[in-house]
View 1: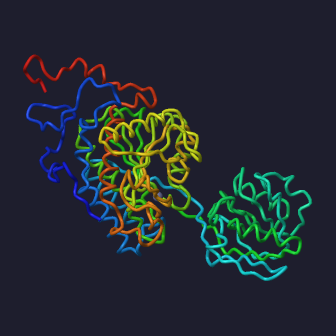
View 2: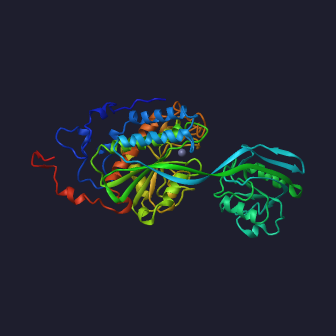
View 3: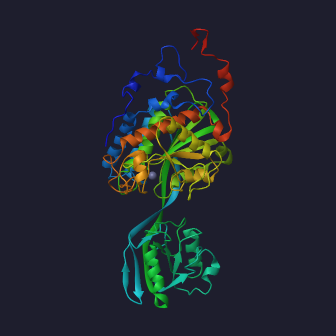
Length: 509
Ligand SMILES: [Zn+2]
């Protein structure tokens, strides 16, 4: 649904000289005046240059090109496919044209693949076939196997069912464990079950809906997640319960890569990192998830290169293998030396900025929402910067949980202040949110999430326009100063104070 942009000339970019000065000089357009003397991080939204340079037209071109690349390469840009490689070549070429020296950051990982549908059947007391995808879902990184045995509940009514070895005291060898979700990781529950001699594990959801989970390392036994109704019915069958559980999957060694590029100028020891994942799910072209974020940071990188050198180095990351478990970003952070980690001032994440039934969400840097990862200090300052920006623009925003479902996870775990924007995914829009953003109540922010329909026709250009302004504003703000986030004042600040722009009525520069 293409939308025009009120108050912005689509020709702005063509009117600008190739290098735009950060500070106004005589004859420059009034919109480019950047207020000197404002405290860092408090620049008025209207004074920012980059949001003016980063246009929806520029972003749309990248989105269209990524869509075309998917279309001609099997319909997706998933990790370890030609679609990903060509998309990566595109990003590299675009960055080079803008003067960057992009690098491929290669990593090895274990790719888990399921080869045929899993089977979970109640054999006794009466036979009941359960439906894969509805009643149960194979956990990612489940081990393979075809197991038959008694189904034995493990401390089923406890909130920490299966979290300790004691829970399995007296567990019969060769049985299939029925465990409730909660307290500890699926990995821990599956490992405890295997250690106790279980030949399979069914982990039952404690909230509504199927349990689509992952064990972090390939489990020794087959593991599936089941709905509460499915699990409760199994447990209600009592001592006579007999189950068959079959998972047909394997883990293969694979290699993929991120694309990393940074500004040539700016303090090396105070790096602002900006990331978006470049890979899509195998099911579709991944236009909202995440050509939208990719295009927004790519266009921002290109426009940033036209400005004078930033005070802080800005490093852009186009992550690979996000959809298989945040692998590219995790490998990147794990691969950094302590000293390199310390140089990263903050991380900004942009994953889904054009949801068709969108909202304007800012990651919960203050850690106020249930289900948020504990935010490192400085994350709240990033949240406030975004909130202030949209408030000045008269646009309502809401916080969204740092759920751990995107590439900020590894950075937050490493203690790096993080933030970002999100237009909504598989959550349902409320009536209240329709008042805030328009759209339709009672359906998801992105009804096409992770499907083949997440295509170029199902993206909100208005959402992408509004949220990409925030991307550009954040990058400009932190390229100048990260003081409110990590306490580092810009090194060039003194120098600027002694270099006035004008003396009396005469412009000096
Ligand atoms: Zn995504």
